Image 1 (tube, rainbow, N blue to C red):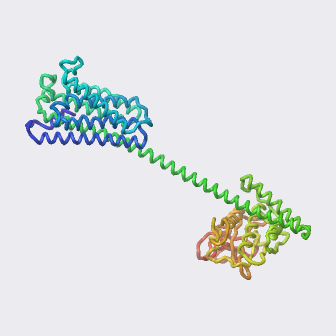
Image 2 (image 1 turned 90 degrees about the horizontal axis):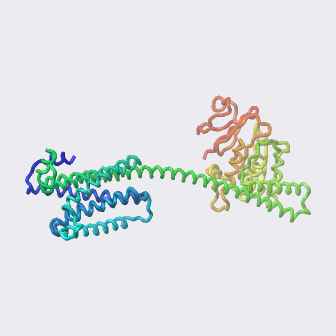
Length: 535
């Protein structure tokens, strides 16, 4: 490579200023590339805590600043030959020592900082350089005088670089460490550049064993300097490329880790939100149960003598049921009871007594022979939420009605309050939605609908006859012949067979005008259709 570069320059006039300016430009570029490579190594250390990258950056930085920059600038103010006598040999020795230390340094060292590593390297350079300068100054009287001149010593040190370059390349291939492999190429290039400087020696010092070497020896000094600078630029460019590739690999690895961390964070956040929601739901149920128990026990305590036997038994049964619900909540488990057929009045009557014990005026119109299918505890919780909602928002008497309609039982909880506007009939069943002037968590209606829908029923609100709101709960009867599900808030309305074209044989169709899925519930000669309200 060196031979090709030098021959490409061709013979020229040693005094030609263009050749000197070209050499200076390449030297400047080489120094800049060395500084860039050192800076990128520091960035690598900063991002990943890579101690070896920091030491490599220090070695390249010392070489760029001392062997290139100082060697070019100091001769202008110091005696001629200073750069040859001690600057270059000292910088090469310090860089070589740093390259050797990298091979045995730990990958992570919390004690290291760029200021410490570069500071130690500069102190070593100044100390070693001063010693070399003294030895060369008094070489005739000091037995430890340096053999030969400075450039000969530099070339010998550069040959040692070649040995470490081989180790770096092999180490990089073995460990799949791009930084080591590229820095091995950098050290090979710098070895060639320093050997090119040795060719600037007088002719009798250079050994000529081939025609190419003889022709190189005859080249002008300026051309040799240019060739050395070009090789140095290429070598330090390898260092920049190596660190850049290492940073790209690090960026890809960190991006993958960041993506995984983001996914894990989102998953954890979702789990935490689900756990928090479950805790809120459990707390809501516990508050309702405690309120019911408190009201029932106060009623039994204050009016025991005035209550008939049936009322006392109903209140005692209601308290027992609420205590059982609290025990399930304390166990932190959701209802796992299998759906069963139960008498509706056995669940509604205790809840009505609890509501009366809390001061509500409640009237129940529930046939004693109605059988529902589902989880009795869940149905009791829903009814309790609806009664509490009617007591808080409504006025006057609360009426609970239950009627059989085909395969479903419709349970209505009616109040005489202001009612629910059409625009809010969907929103009130959303989690956390409540009026701004009403205390509460906004979970009651949301949980109630969830519980009913899990049992293949639904819950919605409509206007009550005579004013107020009527919350309608559709639950399967105790003698089921089919299953159905509801998808959103709305109401059941009777339709004739043949409405909207041909009635689907599977019981599913589309509500005219909005294209949403709904369910038709057969009831003898009539069919009940679930329809979304129009806001």
